[in-house]
Amino acid sequence: MATGAGPDLLTSPVARRGLVLILSSPSGAGKTTLTRALAQRPEWQLALSVSVTTRARRASEIDGQHYRFIEREAFEDLRQRDDLLEWAEVHGNFYGTPRRPVEKALAAGRDMIFDIDYQGTRQVRSKLRDDVVTIFILPPSMAELRRRLERRAEDSPETIEKRLRNARTEIERWSEYDYVLVNDDLDRSFKALEAILTAEHLRRERQTGLDGFVGGLLSASASG
Image (cartoon, rainbow, N blue to C red):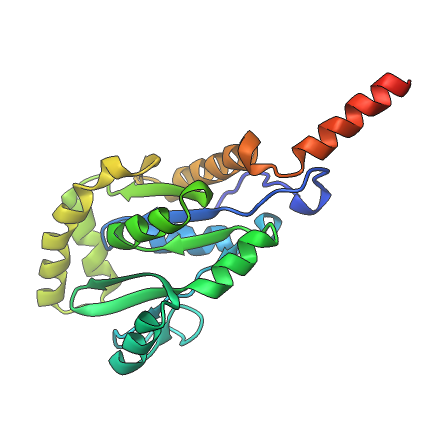
């Protein structure tokens, strides 16, 4: 996959609070592929949010890397203790994001990237509004979305039909997001993600060290 020239965050002279980058899409539109590709680029230093889920593990998935697969009783315990930043029921299964790792990363200036649906996005935004950047990934067509789900060969025909029905409901939420990408080309979509992340890093209110940095510049100018 072609990539841009992401920033070396370690050399920035200005302290910055981390942000939460959320990617959502109907199943098969590419959000998981894009999320993992961006998380694997070391120059971005992104921490990938690993959700907990009650869904059965697919053959291609690794527990603790793609998801933490837990029993429903354990999920209910996390929710009742308010240890989930967000949670949702999707396709009859529960998904959630542990709160503490996210808050710790943001305070340390690290970014977190989320692969969650619109229900989870609403919850995270309500709790971390100023820290959240949201992106919705659209498929180029519904026919292509079906082809991608079928090529994945991990779901039964009945599950694929259910995902396609749910896709319409999810797509209707596109206007709730800050950015919208049509994923007709994976490389182009990835470059767009990098451009968004670069711009969001430079937002004035996110650069928490600007007051001190600019003060130092002005002080040096006055003394010189």
